Length: 116
Image 1 (cartoon, helix red, strand yellow):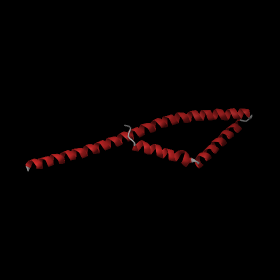
Image 2 (cartoon, helix red, strand yellow):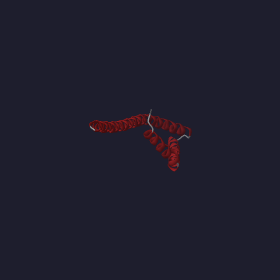
Image 3 (cartoon, one colour):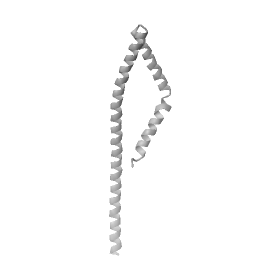
Image 4 (cartoon, rainbow, N blue to C red):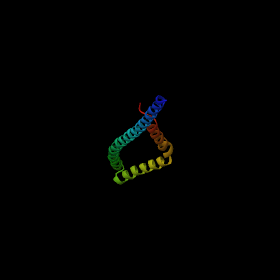
């Protein structure tokens, strides 16, 4: 009888250890995924900043070139601004199918699938 009771106590102890280990593993997995998401976000922010700077300089160059072609610098900036305004309006109208669904899919895939 003592052997059965000792075995049961051992089983309970091992089960408690198992539950604690699973809890720690879950916590570590969550931390790893969060760290990966943060690192990826930082990378995209840095790339975005450099891309925005390049885009800004190229936009100014395009506006000045168009202005020179039209013999009035203001017209070049007006045309580039109108182009971006049109782009913004189109993006706003089509934002859900273009960005929101894809972004949701990427984030869900990132947090639900393991990298193994």
